[in-house]
Every structure is written in C-alpha cells, then in structure tokens.
Amino acid sequence: RQAELAQWVNRRTISADDHHVELAANIGKLEDVQKALDNGAEAIGLFRTEFLYMGRSTLPSEEEQFNSYKYVLEKMQNKPVVIRTLDIGGDKELPYLDLPKESNPFLGQRALRLCLERPDIFRTQLRALLRASRYGNLKIMFPMIAVLSELREAKQLLSEERSKLEAEGVELAEYIEVGMMIEVPAAAISADLFAKEVDFFSIGTNDLIQYTMAADRMNETVSYLYQPCHPSILRLIRMVIEAARKEGKWVGMCGEMAGDETAIPFLLGLGLHEFSMSAGSILRARELIGSLSKKEWDVHTDQAMTLASQDEIQAFVRNHQQGGA
Ligand code: PEP
Ligand code: MG
Image (tube, rainbow, N blue to C red; front, side, top):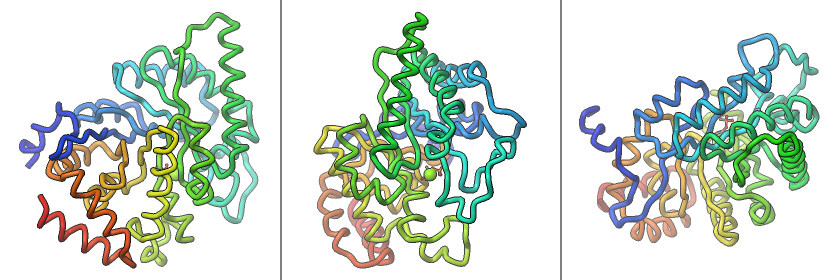
C-alpha cells in the first residue's frame, strides 16, 4: 500500500475533472518539515508555533524564532508556508508566564487574546516573522479571532513592527499575506465582515466544532456531540467559503476534518481551496481527490446539505463515493 501511495508524492492534486486544490501539511516541530516534503505536501497550511514556546523555562528570543521560521521557509523553497502566531492557553500552558488560573481556559485568555494583552511577547514574534519573510513564501495567520477589533489590532501591531524594521534598513518581503483562523462561531457567522480585511481564511474545525456544539474536544463523555459532519458545521463552512468567494479570497482548512475521507468529497464540493492535514494523510487524500469529479460533487453537496443529521450525511457521502467514482 505504501508503495502504491508513493506514486502520488510528486504530483499536483487534481480532481478527476481537472480541478486543482492544494494539499498542505500541519507541522509543530522543525523535524516535521522533512516529513511534509516526503509526503508530497504542496505547502505548509499550519505551523503551530506554540511548540517553540513549550517544554522550556523562558520565552524564545527573537533570534531563536527567526532561525526557526527561516529554516521552515527555506526548506519549503517557494511553497506557501502559513505560520500561525502563538496559540497558548486552553489546554496548552506556559508555566513560566505565571498566568492567573481560569475556570474555563478554553473560553478564556487564549491565543491572540493573550498576545494582545502581552504585546511584548507578540511583537517579538511578529518581528521574527517579518525578518524571516524574505526567505520564502510566508503567510501570517492569527488564531482565535472573534471580533473585528482583534484582527485590526493584530494587523496594526504587525504594520508598526514592519515600519520599525524598514526604518532599521532590514530587508523584508514586499507583501506578506495575512489571514485568520475561523474557529470561533462568531467569526464564521460574520465571515463576510472579516473577508474584506484579510487575504485568506483557514477553518480550524477542531475548535469550531467544540465551540459550536458546546462540547469539549477532549471530553470523552460528550464525544457523541463532537460531530464534524453535523449540518450546523457544514453550514458554517459553507458560509465562510461563500463569504470569502465574494471578496476573491482563498479558504483553507487546518483542523482534523480536512484529512477526513468522509468529509473530503463535500469539502471539494463546497469549494475549499486548501486542505491542511498531518503529513501521513496527504497521499491518501490526493488519491481520493483524483477519483472524485468536482462537478458531480457540487451537485451531491447541495443535496447533502439538505440532510438532517451527521449519520445521514456520512451515509450519503459513502454511497456516492462508491457509486460515483
Ligand atoms: C483547530 O482548532 O482546528 C486548529 C487547527 O487549531 P488547534 O488544533 O491547534 O487548536
Ligand atoms: Mg484551534
């Protein structure tokens, strides 16, 4: 099977009727980049930078971060690399920051919320990213945004750091795409407002599902509610893609759902542009997409969207996958 899949490593990802989508890898550690390339990733769709901050006793310096980002960008040559700014909080703690205990950390000062509260930490990361930008095709992504003012503030800090570096004579990429994760239902529902102010979205289904269904993604006792293919989730995804399309922006997905073989056919039908997943899932996804007709799935997807439950939707996809290709 491994040998069979290997033939897909150096190919572009195209559907049976010639529609191209991008298959990207999620990475956390620097070693993951090689694995992404070995598995034929066309891009890095999510670099979870929190791993640079964890398992140590002090914050990583600007220089350390710069070297890590530069390494990933160079290694990927000119392929797109989406680097997400620090997403700490929730279940990921940094003991050395000595933050106050929260009773609901997943609903607390997580990710960008913390970065805006601690601009010293955030600015250091932004400077490292900006300085690394000239070594490849960097895109910067902000996590956990719920309201426009957060996005605007983050972009403001980024542009201030850019101006400072330029004044210092540091060479930077001329244009860096800036995007945001869609993982808070409020952002999904108001995606039309955000679409005007970003270059791209990446849907973080791991969190979007937990927040939409009000079911902790780590709690087994409510795992029956954790339903990627629930109509509410599919409608949110459709809204996000539609909103982006109207503004001419691209949409990726970097939650686990992007690599889920029952979800891929209708994500293709919904018009998702980029699928980012763990490296080990890429070749199977490429093979699967190669067997699907985008035109047919446009129609199937419209039908699937009228169904009432995850069970019905998954059964529908399986039927059409077997019958279709
Ligand atoms: C997500 O929420 O789907 C996501 C990709 O981010 P993380 O899993 O790091 O929270
Ligand atoms: Mg998330």
